[in-house]
Amino acid sequence: MSDLSGQVALVTGAMGGIGQAITAALRTKGATVVTTDRSGSDMDGDLTDAAFCDGLPARVAQAHGRLDILCNNAGIITRGKITEASDDDLARSLAVNVEAPFRLCRAAIPIMAAQGKGAIVNTASCWGVHPGPNHPIYIMTKAAVASLTQCLGRDHAHQGIRVNAVCPNEVDTPMLRTGFATRGLDPATAIADLDASVPLGRIAQPQDIADVVAFLVSDAARYMCGALVEVNGGKPVT
Ligand SMILES: NC(=O)c1ccc[n+]([C@@H]2O[C@H](COP(=O)([O-])OP(=O)(O)OC[C@H]3O[C@@H](n4cnc5c(N)ncnc54)[C@H](O)[C@@H]3O)[C@@H](O)[C@H]2O)c1
Image (cartoon, rainbow, N blue to C red; front, side, top):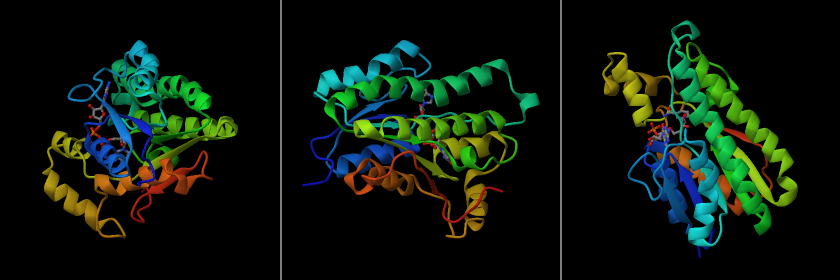
């Protein structure tokens, strides 16, 4: 029997690069995974819609009888200096990267508390822990998610709820590749250059991050609360 069998998980951004890998990893360990994304998922919706976020954990629990695992994985990246940022850039990034995890945690925790157990993993970023250059909106939202993780990890441990975050450096996903394309760079060449900058010799594949998420939600991580786990192949933020 796999160690997540009988457990029900909700994964946001589940149709994206890392989200698909998290979904597959949790299913491999036996969990029932409910996916959500803008389209193509089990429960489609827009995470900038407050009512959608507020109601989603209860919908999952009603459909499947319980909610054991929440992976707040969806995110968007806004590039460029603060002087290039629009009000809409700020509002959208705060809504998807910060407000949605806040609302989903707030709605999921009472359900998990009533069950006596739960695990939440937020996808932050190593940039949220060690700021890099020229992405202030993205970085401050990821710092907020990291801080939220530490706060909730402490506040809800007594209810048997463990809240942790995975903090990747560069991962080979559409988010990374479209960023290169936007800047007029060939993604394959740019990724080969990035590979050479990583002490382990390559940037992460989504599975590298998903395996850590699967560990954090599992009983093997039973004593971890509020941890910000950097998954970076040995590459510091520069
Ligand atoms: N790729 C990287 O290098 C990297 C590094 C560090 C952290 N991260 C984080 O990992 C997470 C996953 O990113 P990814 O690289 O898989 O990106 P991705 O773009 O492949 O996936 C993100 C998913 O989030 C969904 N999403 C975005 N806005 C949404 C909204 N308003 N409503 C519903 N869904 C929405 C998208 O549809 C998409 O499927 C993000 O939080 C990202 O910030 C990525």
